[in-house]
Length: 249
Image 1 (cartoon, rainbow, N blue to C red):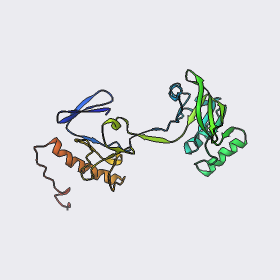
Image 2: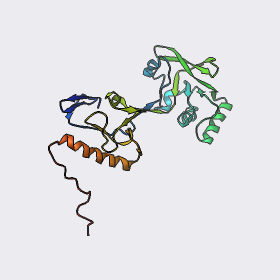
Image 3: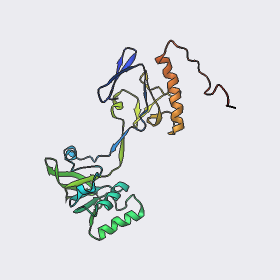
Image 4: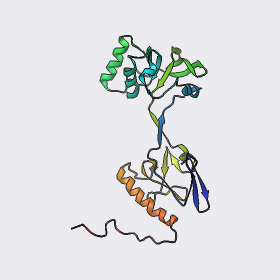
C-alpha cells in the first residue's frame, strides 16, 4: 500500500500499482519494514548511483575486472567482497575508520596479507568525504582522517558496505504514533492511534512486547477480535474456545 485515505466510515487504500481498495479497517503486518542499504552522507551521491559508479551490492564479479575500486566498511560484507574481488579488480582501496575489522579472524588475516602483498591498499583510519567526477562517472573518492586531513583515491567504482537500515516506507506518512521506527499500539487490541488501523508483529511496540512468532499469532487474534466490531458493527460475536469438540478418540 502506498497511501490510505479516510472515506466515510472506512478507508480507501491505494497500492503501488494504482489499485484502489475500500475497506472498513486496516491491519498492518509489515515485519521490520523494508530494508535498504545505509547510504553514506555524501553530496551528489544519487548521480553516481544512477550510473552504477556507486553500488551497494555486486551482481557479477566480471563487471569489476581491471577496474579501480574503493570498498568502504569493515564488516563481513566489506571483507567478503575485498577477498572476492581482489583477483579481478585492477586495484582496490579499502577505507575503514579503524584498524580492526568486524569479521571472522581468518578473513581479517587474509585481508592484511593482501595488503602486505601489495594487492590492496588499506586506507586506515579514514572515512568517506566526497566524490569527484563528471556526469555520474566517478574519477576519485575523497577521504578524510580523524584530524580532518583529506586525500584523493583514484577510483571508477565505490562500494560502500555500511549495513542495512529499516525503512517504513509510505507507512511513515499515515499519521501513526511511531517511535524509533516502531508503531505504538494498545496491548489488548493492537489498535494504533488512528481509528480503524491496527498493527501486529515486529513492527509494533507496547509495554512488554516480545518479538516472537508466537506473540505475532496472539496479536493477530486480538486485532481480528477488535476489528470485528468495526467490520460487522451489527453482529454479535459469539466467542468460544479454540477447541469445542474435545480430543479425538
